[in-house]
Length: 158
Figure 1 (cartoon, rainbow, N blue to C red):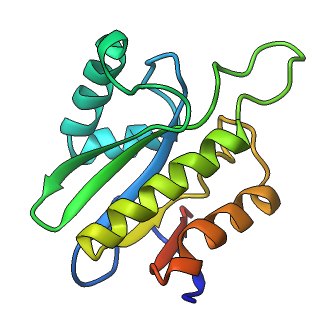
Figure 2 (tube, rainbow, N blue to C red; figure 1 turned 180 degrees about the vertical axis):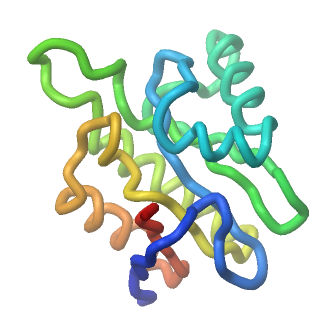
């Protein structure tokens, strides 16, 4: 089993050799404009375009909580758009994060990482705008990825 490594840095600039997947979560509303995605979009336009198209065409594809879309941005880097939160934070209805959907995303991501022999790089997914708690997210990451011998690095942006 691989261990999860937490470092200070920018998850859009993964520090590893070989194939890499940068993972992040989006809500199921098709929006892209706050949080970590701004850093992704500053570096590459493709993930946003692909995510918006995926959402717009959702009647005919797999777009739903728990789904993962991989977008190649460099020969050795893919971005994983993962649908984890439901809606956005409004009122007192609780945080948008759906831990069951995030777990499905991470299990699907593990399959992709293994197929591409890729390491996985991410911010503390689901813990920003989605309102999740890292003490609930970390075990999901460890069980889905690290337990399958996938190197995982979590970046805390300083």
